[in-house]
Image (tube, rainbow, N blue to C red; front, side, top):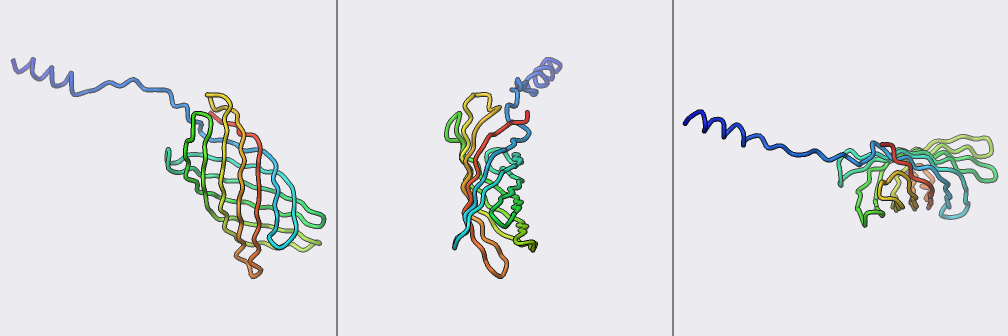
Length: 165
């Protein structure tokens, strides 16, 4: 009797669950173009490259990216680290709002300067397929430089999403 009771306890104490395949990619690469408009005048155009990963599912996504933008007499490299809160709008659409630090390296008329800034961004993602391998993104952003000039700019990045399984 005791052996049957012990065997039953052992048999039913271990619940076996079938594991589902994790379809979440390790990271997502953003490749595209970018425009930047200085509040108070001036605009520039360039490219955008970023890598995004998910440390906490449905709560936190982190994006590390760089954007070189060019105008008539200057080159600016914006490198940022954004902490984003994701929301799934549908099986194909996602939205994220994020904030984080940014390092800005500018070379204008042969003079280089560096500054720290803060960035706020909204990220809209569309995945045409259900597998989420390739998609599109649009990311408007606002930058505020902490230097003595307190430069502000509005940016827009757009392009292709590539999931890394």
